[in-house]
Image 1 (cartoon, rainbow, N blue to C red):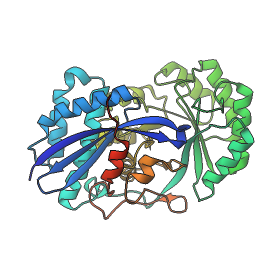
Image 2 (image 1 turned 180 degrees about the vertical axis):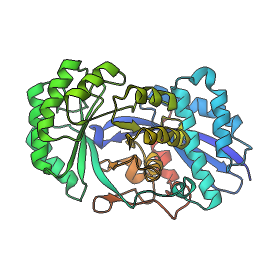
Image 3 (image 1 turned 90 degrees about the vertical axis):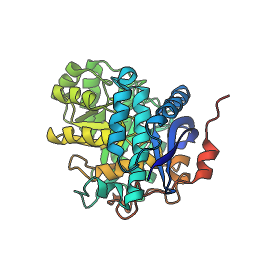
Image 4 (image 1 turned 30 degrees about the horizontal axis):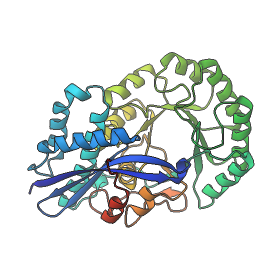
Length: 377
Protein backbone atom coordinates (compact mmCIF):
# COMPACT_ATOMS: atom_id res chain seq x y z
CA UNK A 1 0.00 0.00 0.00
CA UNK A 2 1.59 3.26 -1.10
CA UNK A 3 0.80 6.77 -2.29
CA UNK A 4 1.21 7.16 -6.05
CA UNK A 5 0.23 10.79 -6.76
CA UNK A 6 -0.14 14.21 -5.12
CA UNK A 7 -2.03 16.86 -7.11
CA UNK A 8 -2.36 20.47 -5.88
CA UNK A 9 -5.42 22.21 -7.32
CA UNK A 10 -5.82 25.99 -6.88
CA UNK A 11 -9.48 27.00 -7.16
CA UNK A 12 -11.28 30.36 -7.38
CA UNK A 13 -14.99 30.78 -6.72
CA UNK A 14 -17.62 33.49 -6.12
CA UNK A 15 -18.70 33.74 -2.48
CA UNK A 16 -22.29 34.96 -1.88
CA UNK A 17 -21.49 35.27 1.83
CA UNK A 18 -18.76 37.78 0.96
CA UNK A 19 -20.66 40.07 -1.44
CA UNK A 20 -19.87 37.75 -4.40
CA UNK A 21 -16.14 38.35 -4.04
CA UNK A 22 -13.83 35.87 -5.74
CA UNK A 23 -12.13 33.78 -3.07
CA UNK A 24 -9.24 31.37 -3.34
CA UNK A 25 -8.40 27.94 -1.94
CA UNK A 26 -5.74 25.39 -2.76
CA UNK A 27 -7.08 21.84 -2.73
CA UNK A 28 -4.91 18.75 -2.83
CA UNK A 29 -5.82 15.30 -4.11
CA UNK A 30 -3.70 12.37 -2.90
CA UNK A 31 -4.19 8.95 -4.47
CA UNK A 32 -2.84 5.56 -3.41
CA UNK A 33 -2.29 2.31 -5.29
CA UNK A 34 -5.50 0.86 -3.84
CA UNK A 35 -7.53 3.43 -5.74
CA UNK A 36 -8.38 5.45 -2.64
CA UNK A 37 -8.36 9.25 -2.81
CA UNK A 38 -7.82 11.72 0.03
CA UNK A 39 -8.84 15.37 -0.26
CA UNK A 40 -7.29 18.29 1.60
CA UNK A 41 -7.54 22.07 1.52
CA UNK A 42 -5.86 25.23 2.67
CA UNK A 43 -7.47 28.67 2.73
CA UNK A 44 -4.94 30.78 0.84
CA UNK A 45 -7.32 33.77 0.44
CA UNK A 46 -5.36 35.50 -2.35
CA UNK A 47 -4.54 34.23 -5.84
CA UNK A 48 -0.79 34.82 -5.64
CA UNK A 49 -0.63 32.73 -2.46
CA UNK A 50 -2.70 30.06 -4.20
CA UNK A 51 -0.17 29.50 -6.97
CA UNK A 52 2.78 29.66 -4.57
CA UNK A 53 1.16 27.07 -2.30
CA UNK A 54 0.42 24.77 -5.24
CA UNK A 55 4.06 24.97 -6.32
CA UNK A 56 5.22 24.16 -2.79
CA UNK A 57 2.87 21.16 -2.51
CA UNK A 58 4.14 19.92 -5.85
CA UNK A 59 7.71 20.15 -4.59
CA UNK A 60 6.89 18.42 -1.29
CA UNK A 61 5.28 15.52 -3.13
CA UNK A 62 8.68 13.80 -3.25
CA UNK A 63 8.36 13.31 0.53
CA UNK A 64 4.90 11.75 0.11
CA UNK A 65 4.86 9.59 -3.01
CA UNK A 66 5.79 6.00 -2.23
CA UNK A 67 4.88 6.30 1.47
CA UNK A 68 2.30 4.20 3.28
CA UNK A 69 -0.86 6.39 3.53
CA UNK A 70 -1.69 5.00 6.95
CA UNK A 71 1.53 6.44 8.42
CA UNK A 72 0.37 10.04 8.10
CA UNK A 73 1.99 11.22 11.34
CA UNK A 74 5.48 10.31 10.10
CA UNK A 75 4.83 12.18 6.85
CA UNK A 76 3.65 15.25 8.79
CA UNK A 77 6.83 15.21 10.87
CA UNK A 78 9.06 14.76 7.83
CA UNK A 79 7.47 17.76 6.11
CA UNK A 80 7.85 19.82 9.30
CA UNK A 81 11.56 18.99 9.34
CA UNK A 82 11.89 19.96 5.70
CA UNK A 83 10.06 23.29 5.94
CA UNK A 84 11.84 24.66 9.01
CA UNK A 85 14.04 26.94 6.92
CA UNK A 86 11.17 28.61 5.04
CA UNK A 87 8.24 28.04 7.40
CA UNK A 88 9.60 28.39 10.94
CA UNK A 89 6.91 30.84 12.08
CA UNK A 90 4.23 29.88 9.58
CA UNK A 91 3.22 31.33 6.23
CA UNK A 92 2.76 29.56 2.90
CA UNK A 93 4.62 26.50 4.18
CA UNK A 94 1.85 26.05 6.75
CA UNK A 95 -0.75 26.27 3.99
CA UNK A 96 0.96 23.48 2.09
CA UNK A 97 1.30 21.25 5.13
CA UNK A 98 -2.33 21.91 6.10
CA UNK A 99 -3.72 20.77 2.76
CA UNK A 100 -1.47 17.71 2.62
CA UNK A 101 -2.23 16.67 6.20
CA UNK A 102 -6.02 16.91 5.80
CA UNK A 103 -5.81 14.80 2.64
CA UNK A 104 -3.64 12.21 4.39
CA UNK A 105 -6.12 11.85 7.27
CA UNK A 106 -8.91 11.41 4.72
CA UNK A 107 -6.88 8.78 2.87
CA UNK A 108 -5.90 7.00 6.09
CA UNK A 109 -9.54 6.71 7.13
CA UNK A 110 -10.56 5.32 3.77
CA UNK A 111 -7.87 2.64 4.00
CA UNK A 112 -8.79 1.71 7.57
CA UNK A 113 -12.55 2.00 7.08
CA UNK A 114 -12.77 4.51 9.94
CA UNK A 115 -14.16 8.03 10.14
CA UNK A 116 -11.87 10.89 11.13
CA UNK A 117 -13.77 11.22 14.40
CA UNK A 118 -13.21 7.54 15.18
CA UNK A 119 -9.49 7.86 14.39
CA UNK A 120 -9.30 10.83 16.77
CA UNK A 121 -10.86 8.85 19.61
CA UNK A 122 -14.58 9.52 19.28
CA UNK A 123 -17.01 12.24 20.37
CA UNK A 124 -17.30 13.93 23.75
CA UNK A 125 -20.48 15.80 22.71
CA UNK A 126 -23.84 14.30 21.75
CA UNK A 127 -24.50 17.36 19.59
CA UNK A 128 -23.36 20.95 19.16
CA UNK A 129 -25.48 24.07 18.53
CA UNK A 130 -25.17 25.46 15.02
CA UNK A 131 -25.06 29.18 14.28
CA UNK A 132 -25.01 31.32 11.13
CA UNK A 133 -21.66 32.92 10.27
CA UNK A 134 -21.99 35.67 7.69
CA UNK A 135 -21.07 39.20 6.75
CA UNK A 136 -23.13 42.38 6.93
CA UNK A 137 -23.60 43.74 3.39
CA UNK A 138 -26.66 45.96 3.11
CA UNK A 139 -26.85 49.71 3.74
CA UNK A 140 -30.21 49.30 5.50
CA UNK A 141 -30.12 48.07 9.07
CA UNK A 142 -33.81 46.99 8.97
CA UNK A 143 -33.05 44.89 5.87
CA UNK A 144 -30.09 43.28 7.59
CA UNK A 145 -32.30 42.52 10.59
CA UNK A 146 -34.78 40.80 8.27
CA UNK A 147 -31.96 38.84 6.71
CA UNK A 148 -30.79 37.72 10.16
CA UNK A 149 -34.28 36.41 10.86
CA UNK A 150 -34.17 34.50 7.56
CA UNK A 151 -30.80 32.99 8.47
CA UNK A 152 -32.19 31.70 11.76
CA UNK A 153 -35.58 30.60 10.43
CA UNK A 154 -34.37 27.02 9.83
CA UNK A 155 -33.40 26.60 13.49
CA UNK A 156 -29.92 28.04 13.73
CA UNK A 157 -29.27 29.10 17.31
CA UNK A 158 -27.57 32.42 16.76
CA UNK A 159 -25.33 34.38 14.45
CA UNK A 160 -21.86 35.77 14.06
CA UNK A 161 -21.60 38.75 11.75
CA UNK A 162 -18.57 40.35 10.16
CA UNK A 163 -17.96 44.11 10.34
CA UNK A 164 -15.75 45.99 7.90
CA UNK A 165 -16.48 43.59 5.07
CA UNK A 166 -17.35 44.10 1.39
CA UNK A 167 -20.69 45.70 0.58
CA UNK A 168 -22.58 48.74 1.79
CA UNK A 169 -23.13 48.03 5.48
CA UNK A 170 -20.32 50.36 6.62
CA UNK A 171 -20.07 48.71 10.03
CA UNK A 172 -17.11 49.07 12.34
CA UNK A 173 -16.46 52.73 11.51
CA UNK A 174 -19.12 54.77 13.34
CA UNK A 175 -20.06 54.29 16.99
CA UNK A 176 -23.74 55.16 16.69
CA UNK A 177 -24.34 53.06 13.58
CA UNK A 178 -22.60 50.06 15.10
CA UNK A 179 -24.61 50.31 18.31
CA UNK A 180 -27.85 50.74 16.33
CA UNK A 181 -27.02 47.66 14.27
CA UNK A 182 -26.24 45.43 17.27
CA UNK A 183 -29.42 46.56 19.02
CA UNK A 184 -31.47 45.83 15.91
CA UNK A 185 -29.93 42.37 15.60
CA UNK A 186 -30.66 41.56 19.21
CA UNK A 187 -34.28 42.63 18.81
CA UNK A 188 -34.60 40.71 15.53
CA UNK A 189 -33.20 37.36 16.68
CA UNK A 190 -34.37 37.45 20.30
CA UNK A 191 -32.71 37.44 23.68
CA UNK A 192 -32.19 33.66 23.72
CA UNK A 193 -30.02 33.51 20.58
CA UNK A 194 -26.23 33.78 20.44
CA UNK A 195 -24.84 36.99 18.93
CA UNK A 196 -21.18 37.53 18.06
CA UNK A 197 -19.37 40.32 16.25
CA UNK A 198 -16.30 39.62 14.10
CA UNK A 199 -14.14 42.57 13.05
CA UNK A 200 -12.47 42.35 9.65
CA UNK A 201 -8.83 43.33 9.11
CA UNK A 202 -9.95 46.66 7.59
CA UNK A 203 -11.14 47.83 11.04
CA UNK A 204 -8.36 49.51 13.05
CA UNK A 205 -9.75 50.38 16.48
CA UNK A 206 -7.49 51.83 19.12
CA UNK A 207 -7.93 50.68 22.71
CA UNK A 208 -10.20 53.56 23.76
CA UNK A 209 -12.49 53.04 20.78
CA UNK A 210 -12.66 49.30 21.42
CA UNK A 211 -13.57 49.83 25.07
CA UNK A 212 -16.29 52.37 24.30
CA UNK A 213 -17.78 50.29 21.46
CA UNK A 214 -17.75 46.97 23.27
CA UNK A 215 -19.21 48.47 26.46
CA UNK A 216 -22.08 49.76 24.33
CA UNK A 217 -22.52 46.30 22.75
CA UNK A 218 -22.66 44.81 26.23
CA UNK A 219 -26.07 46.43 26.65
CA UNK A 220 -27.38 43.90 24.12
CA UNK A 221 -25.53 40.95 25.62
CA UNK A 222 -23.30 39.89 22.76
CA UNK A 223 -21.53 36.60 23.42
CA UNK A 224 -18.13 37.58 22.10
CA UNK A 225 -16.25 40.19 20.08
CA UNK A 226 -13.70 38.79 17.62
CA UNK A 227 -10.37 40.49 16.88
CA UNK A 228 -11.39 43.98 18.04
CA UNK A 229 -7.68 44.86 18.39
CA UNK A 230 -6.29 42.68 15.64
CA UNK A 231 -4.00 39.69 15.86
CA UNK A 232 -1.67 40.76 18.69
CA UNK A 233 -2.13 43.42 21.36
CA UNK A 234 -1.79 41.82 24.81
CA UNK A 235 -1.95 45.05 26.80
CA UNK A 236 -4.89 46.32 24.79
CA UNK A 237 -6.77 43.06 25.12
CA UNK A 238 -6.04 42.97 28.84
CA UNK A 239 -7.55 46.44 29.23
CA UNK A 240 -10.58 45.62 27.08
CA UNK A 241 -11.22 42.35 28.88
CA UNK A 242 -11.20 44.11 32.25
CA UNK A 243 -13.69 46.76 31.12
CA UNK A 244 -16.30 44.67 29.27
CA UNK A 245 -18.42 41.65 30.04
CA UNK A 246 -18.47 39.83 26.70
CA UNK A 247 -15.83 37.26 25.82
CA UNK A 248 -12.77 38.24 23.78
CA UNK A 249 -11.99 36.10 20.74
CA UNK A 250 -8.90 36.04 18.54
CA UNK A 251 -6.10 33.73 17.37
CA UNK A 252 -7.43 33.01 13.88
CA UNK A 253 -4.31 34.48 12.25
CA UNK A 254 -1.86 32.21 14.07
CA UNK A 255 -0.10 29.39 12.24
CA UNK A 256 0.96 26.77 14.77
CA UNK A 257 1.17 25.64 18.39
CA UNK A 258 3.81 28.23 19.23
CA UNK A 259 1.58 31.08 18.09
CA UNK A 260 -1.36 29.90 20.19
CA UNK A 261 0.88 29.23 23.18
CA UNK A 262 2.04 32.84 23.04
CA UNK A 263 -1.56 34.08 23.24
CA UNK A 264 -2.46 31.61 25.99
CA UNK A 265 0.43 32.90 28.08
CA UNK A 266 -1.02 36.42 27.99
CA UNK A 267 -4.31 35.27 29.53
CA UNK A 268 -6.20 37.76 27.36
CA UNK A 269 -8.20 35.49 25.05
CA UNK A 270 -11.37 33.60 25.94
CA UNK A 271 -12.27 32.10 22.55
CA UNK A 272 -9.58 30.87 20.14
CA UNK A 273 -10.41 30.75 16.45
CA UNK A 274 -8.58 27.91 14.67
CA UNK A 275 -8.63 26.96 10.97
CA UNK A 276 -7.24 23.52 10.03
CA UNK A 277 -6.65 24.93 6.56
CA UNK A 278 -3.80 27.10 7.89
CA UNK A 279 -2.60 25.62 11.22
CA UNK A 280 -0.72 22.65 9.75
CA UNK A 281 -3.82 20.58 9.14
CA UNK A 282 -5.79 18.28 11.38
CA UNK A 283 -2.59 17.23 13.16
CA UNK A 284 -1.72 20.83 13.99
CA UNK A 285 -5.37 21.58 14.83
CA UNK A 286 -5.55 18.81 17.45
CA UNK A 287 -2.23 19.81 19.01
CA UNK A 288 -3.48 23.39 19.45
CA UNK A 289 -6.84 22.26 20.82
CA UNK A 290 -5.15 20.18 23.51
CA UNK A 291 -3.32 23.30 24.76
CA UNK A 292 -6.50 25.39 24.77
CA UNK A 293 -8.40 22.67 26.59
CA UNK A 294 -5.70 22.40 29.26
CA UNK A 295 -6.02 26.16 29.89
CA UNK A 296 -9.81 25.78 30.18
CA UNK A 297 -10.46 28.20 27.34
CA UNK A 298 -12.90 27.88 24.45
CA UNK A 299 -11.90 26.73 20.98
CA UNK A 300 -13.90 27.62 17.89
CA UNK A 301 -13.37 26.16 14.44
CA UNK A 302 -12.93 28.67 11.65
CA UNK A 303 -14.48 26.75 8.75
CA UNK A 304 -15.35 29.55 6.34
CA UNK A 305 -14.12 27.92 3.14
CA UNK A 306 -15.01 24.54 1.58
CA UNK A 307 -16.78 21.40 2.75
CA UNK A 308 -13.35 19.77 3.10
CA UNK A 309 -12.23 22.04 5.93
CA UNK A 310 -15.75 22.02 7.37
CA UNK A 311 -15.74 18.22 7.57
CA UNK A 312 -12.36 18.26 9.31
CA UNK A 313 -13.50 21.01 11.67
CA UNK A 314 -16.74 19.28 12.65
CA UNK A 315 -14.88 16.08 13.50
CA UNK A 316 -12.26 17.82 15.66
CA UNK A 317 -14.97 19.96 17.32
CA UNK A 318 -16.56 16.78 18.63
CA UNK A 319 -13.32 15.52 20.19
CA UNK A 320 -12.92 18.24 22.82
CA UNK A 321 -15.03 19.89 25.50
CA UNK A 322 -13.33 23.17 24.53
CA UNK A 323 -15.74 23.51 21.57
CA UNK A 324 -19.17 24.97 22.31
CA UNK A 325 -20.77 25.45 18.85
CA UNK A 326 -20.23 25.16 15.11
CA UNK A 327 -20.61 27.83 12.43
CA UNK A 328 -22.37 27.43 9.07
CA UNK A 329 -22.40 29.89 6.19
CA UNK A 330 -26.01 31.06 5.86
CA UNK A 331 -26.05 31.43 2.05
CA UNK A 332 -25.41 28.53 -0.36
CA UNK A 333 -22.04 28.70 -2.09
CA UNK A 334 -20.10 26.55 -4.58
CA UNK A 335 -17.45 25.18 -2.25
CA UNK A 336 -19.99 23.99 0.32
CA UNK A 337 -23.07 23.13 -1.72
CA UNK A 338 -21.70 22.03 -5.10
CA UNK A 339 -18.34 20.50 -4.23
CA UNK A 340 -19.60 17.38 -2.44
CA UNK A 341 -22.41 14.93 -3.10
CA UNK A 342 -23.99 15.54 0.31
CA UNK A 343 -23.42 19.08 1.63
CA UNK A 344 -22.79 19.39 5.35
CA UNK A 345 -25.87 20.66 7.14
CA UNK A 346 -27.32 21.21 10.57
CA UNK A 347 -30.52 19.51 11.73
CA UNK A 348 -32.93 21.93 13.39
CA UNK A 349 -30.04 24.00 14.67
CA UNK A 350 -27.84 21.12 15.80
CA UNK A 351 -24.85 19.37 14.28
CA UNK A 352 -24.25 15.72 15.17
CA UNK A 353 -21.07 13.58 15.38
CA UNK A 354 -19.89 12.55 11.88
CA UNK A 355 -19.56 8.81 12.36
CA UNK A 356 -19.95 5.94 9.93
CA UNK A 357 -18.39 7.19 6.70
CA UNK A 358 -14.62 6.70 6.35
CA UNK A 359 -12.14 9.55 6.34
CA UNK A 360 -13.69 13.00 6.19
CA UNK A 361 -17.03 11.42 5.34
CA UNK A 362 -17.52 13.49 2.17
CA UNK A 363 -17.42 12.64 -1.53
CA UNK A 364 -15.82 15.37 -3.62
CA UNK A 365 -17.12 15.80 -7.17
CA UNK A 366 -14.21 16.05 -9.61
CA UNK A 367 -16.25 17.86 -12.23
CA UNK A 368 -16.97 20.67 -9.77
CA UNK A 369 -13.29 20.91 -8.84
CA UNK A 370 -12.44 21.27 -12.52
CA UNK A 371 -15.13 23.92 -13.00
CA UNK A 372 -13.50 26.20 -10.43
CA UNK A 373 -9.89 25.24 -11.10
CA UNK A 374 -7.74 28.38 -11.26
CA UNK A 375 -5.68 28.64 -14.42
CA UNK A 376 -2.47 30.65 -14.34
CA UNK A 377 -2.28 32.90 -17.40
